[in-house]
Length: 73
Image 1 (cartoon, rainbow, N blue to C red):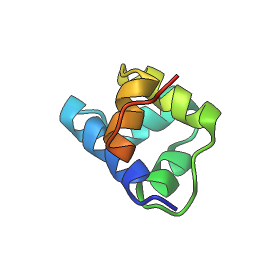
Image 2 (cartoon, helix red, strand yellow; image 1 turned 135 degrees about the vertical axis):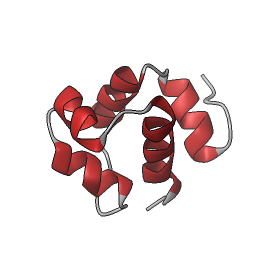
Image 3 (tube, one colour; image 1 turned 30 degrees about the horizontal axis):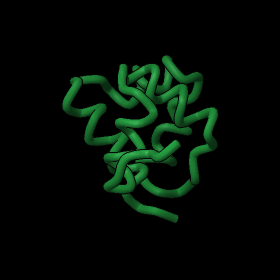
Image 4 (cartoon, helix red, strand yellow; image 1 turned 120 degrees about the vertical axis):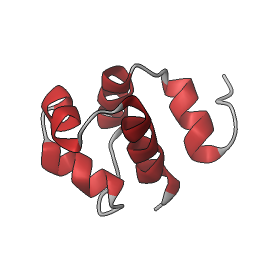
């Protein structure tokens, strides 16, 4: 698993001043947020989209931060 996926979510969440509990409410599961941030589970595409929406970032911004490159079409 790419360890950067969870750390990107955690970093953005902290920058925005959103608690893990609040982000969990926004996506439907605080335990899922915890597992993703601690790299205990791989987020599905759907979960990534929910997280991006809750954090007000585009999927492309997330992808670039997590993988160090822009998504190509």
